[in-house]
Length: 240
Image (tube, rainbow, N blue to C red; front, side):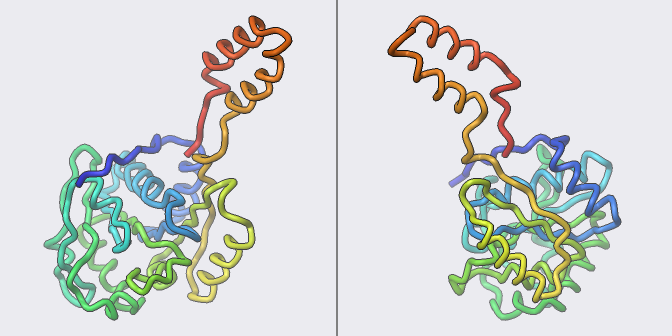
């Protein structure tokens, strides 16, 4: 089943900042992960890859999240057999024209132990760089210890840079610090964090909530203020 994937604008300020810290400093293999599942890793990984493609870089996104596989399933694709021990990833890459990218679907059937070896993964990414200018890895969450996931810290250790996506208002600072410490212990180069505001109310939502307190005393005024707030594009901006 295909899952529709929301696209983050490729010239989003936070995306531009991360792009400068990674690709702008010559990083060509970048791991995108989060502390917990569901924090928006695929959305940001895809945006970063599309940003590279828009800049003239031949880019590929590697779906290394075998538990959720959002990048793969959002295209209606199935997982494919490939392994970092050989050249099979080259033959498994699919061209996604409307994204302007190559996509390596999530793996299936290979020995899971080979995905836990950063040296093998690093060699695989180096081979990918013979065909692409930029490799973005959509990794599982750092704290996904289900036993099926490809460990995010191993993926991060095999890449030149790592980005941590944080769900604002959902993931605690303590959990983020634990994830960062785990990445550091694996010798990953954590270059920055991205706040996903998806679950935070917009300024418009908060203003409308406050305006509703006026409704019992001045219902007409409250209704007019609500309409004005909802029509104001600046107040309704949402990041994430």
